[in-house]
Length: 58
Image (cartoon, rainbow, N blue to C red; front, side):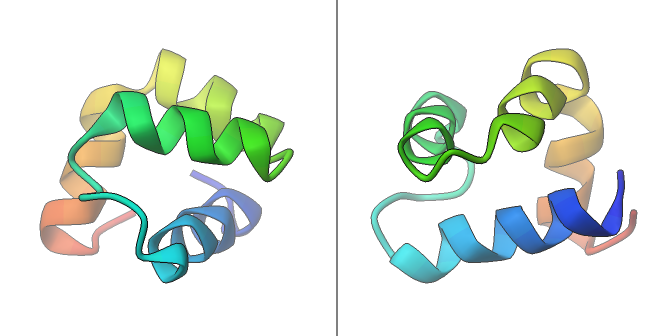
């Protein structure tokens, strides 16, 4: 996970529009915000994303 993706996750979280474990909604919000790096990351590395949300570990 790059720093850019981490910042995009924080930006999606800051919207307050979804539970960050609802990956389908996170994907939709990321797409709306034009965070295409995050969209690709979520599609390819879901387990790494979930671990980051749970523990903060990158």
